[in-house]
Length: 325
Image 1: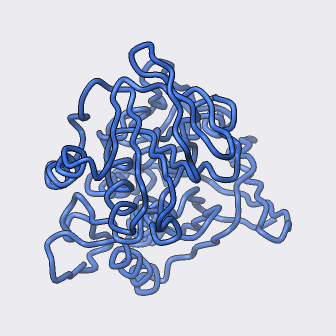
Image 2: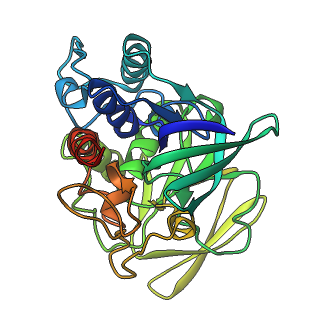
Image 3: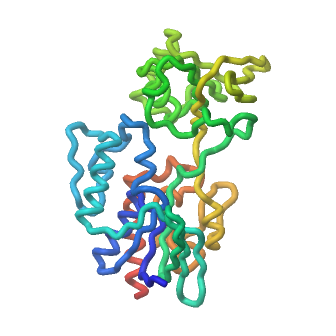
């Protein structure tokens, strides 16, 4: 059994920030990440631009310098890789935490690697920074499990001259639609809302709306998708049932945090807000010695915590851990 002082579950910017703050206080931490580091950013569309400016994404006092004020996906990936190297962070990628069990004053963390190897750790504290985007909000309709249906969008090129349906009307749906249109796809957008979502980034909405008004992108509001088949999508708008020819579907219907894992650890969850129970000053949960960091602390409101404020959680947690040791 491998003995660690702190184990951080999740290798995103907020988990990395926690490791850096602990390192600054001479406390060793091991990050365990089930995919690659900053996996959420990796899953962004290839040309995705951040809402935040580059300096607000910085961690570990490592400057993030870009030509434009707001960086794009690949710049962020390179930046966080460089931070991990410069800070000599200990990260185990492609290793999934199966469970966390508390016994006496220790936590026993059991994992499995991508090649099937099972590993057990013993730690004094656990920090959970698993993010928000691992679990899509499924529609629960026939055909959603077809190979042509995707819940993440990265690259538009393969869909040149294909009939593509985008389900949703918020930022991820709008971003995907713009990229697909530029790549020559025939795009239809179905959104259950009555009008454009207020959360759509103001600098991309005019471009999107212009495509809709010029009929270059077909969009229907008040639309409920009923069924997806290999060649068609059936839906309903204002009581009228319709169908369209379809090759691929991007169901950009949002995501939710992994509450099952939190509950397995013993963390209490507010059913209405989805927020885990934790102390606002220390981010320690109802399980002494277990902390949450980053957007997982926001519950269902992923507009409350971003990298730019979630990166500050590491200092609060590190200060709390230092006081008790």
